[in-house]
Length: 273
Image (cartoon, helix red, strand yellow):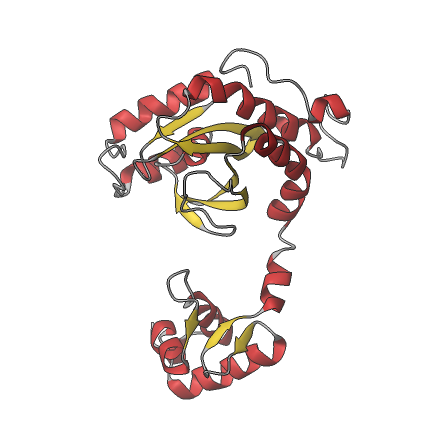
């Protein structure tokens, strides 16, 4: 589609979409090229974005995402409400393990990390709040994909599945078996599928009508912990967050509300969550 056929809104969104984790600051000409707009158009729209606060111009003349845009994005209900409810449980999980703790939701055929707590001595991870990742490789991604609608699963399995390491599962039939096991057992394990030195264990978070709305995980250095020792901890966190999520009438879900529920002792066999 040519520039003239695109709406002003589409051009503005394309300019914002030009920024990535690998390119957090861009010159005006780079913005124009990445957004597919002329330099005069980029100049006008970027000036408006700077005035509003969506972009900031540094002393070097390059543009960066502004705090105003972050403030607006932080109001997204799926992220904000979930994060507020989940944080005490994530903090508990971190205090028990001192490992990386992650919270994620599904957005289309990708996952978005809503929150993370990084262990000081824990294995490095590729996670950043607001970052996206493929569903088929991570623990949280496997949980979210396993409980996604059937058409979403088929789209994900039909798309090219990126291999991050020699352990990444890229065979659709094998993934179908794994997703069935995740639904049956109530947890997912990703061992060396993103980086060979990391292992994650994840569990679902359920909202209204028992729908899986998010996933929580622990990421540890591979070989330092038996996955089954982490499963009850992650499942307990998932159940606690699920109980505290508001139902459609605005009240906490059944079984939530007490301190014991929030800090409940891990229990139950794998898959009981």
